[in-house]
Amino acid sequence: MMTSARAKELLRRELLARRRQLRDSPERKAELDSQITRHALALVRELNARTVAAYDPFPTEPAGRGFPAALAAEVPTLLLPVTLPHGLMAWKDYEGSEQLPPGILASCDVVLVPAAAVDKSGLRLGKGGGYYDRALAGLSVPTAAVVYHDEYVHTVPHDPHDVAVSAIITEEGWWRSEGTKTP
Image (cartoon, rainbow, N blue to C red; front, side, top):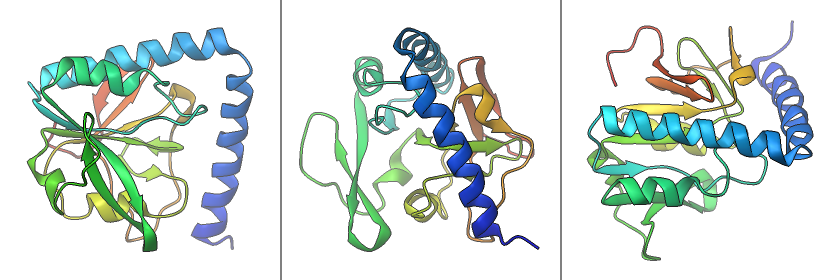
């Protein structure tokens, strides 16, 4: 029987290989990223969000390089992650470089997180470091995984410590994950 860690690694490799192929089609990637950004902004507007935590996408990640700027133009406060040693994250304001106090995510109206895949229940497959699972643990604000639509899968291998998100954003739209009350 395959372990959860092994199943996660195999799925992660497959999906990241697809992303590298997509990066080789810059026009198609830009089109998908633009649509994802548009749907992320629609969710932000639906929630009347004023404070949003997001991420600054790597070249292969969904939403593209303009994602933080588009969000910052929409909301008064945008927070971006800073990785720390030992699998921890801190946050900084989009405009600043100073790290914000622990627990700042609890003041957000929505947290947008990257993922390699997400399933209908909101369980997400990340890069394997557990940074976002630790950051989202115990958080009661709306959270949304940002993926390409073909990364929205039936089931993601998971462990008890994995934290589900409450919504999914792809180039086809955004929707609540099954069994969640927010957003």
